[in-house]
Length: 211
Ligand code: SAH
Image (tube, rainbow, N blue to C red; front, side, top):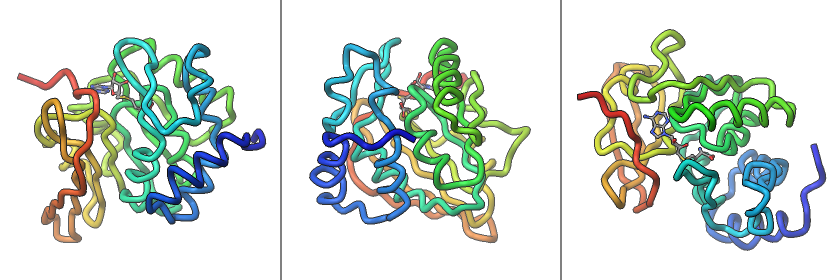
């Protein structure tokens, strides 16, 4: 891995740690992941500002604080198999892959899926599988998952994703229309669902809702 740059370290301290991210694994993954590689060349100067950036096709890479916070809320464990909906640039996948056993990530825009797959391979991440498909269906062949994270916002929780969450598992997602709430869903060992609201967020919509 490349050495973290000074701007990367500054962002980590001033934007991430100062705002309540304390999970050592999450902080380590943020430090070790070259965010500038996940944004278009024209945006590189802003890679270590705590803001979302355009990645093409009307999509964005989330702001680092939100990536860190959602990852911490997901409570990833080393043995976990994680499903992500909304690969985008692949940055969130890269962060997760350093904390869990395997990341499966689904992206509906084919060129984004392809670009993420190429970049993640080039950067040497070996435990991430990218698929181009509609996340509303999840990834039934590989279910159940210990953790599920959505980085595009559906108006309601896709039933297939709740189904594909392992008992004892956790799902983190933005839910809503133009503004959303970040929610944490826990499935207890008996399959019962508990849901709590964390804070307001603004994500791109999850498209392709089945009629
Ligand atoms: N996790 C990404 C953030 C990407 S933005 C990152 O770290 O860069 C959300 C992504 O979700 C977009 O790329 C968008 O194309 C994708 N998306 C939207 N609806 C989707 C769906 N139904 N299934 C899969 N991906 C979807």
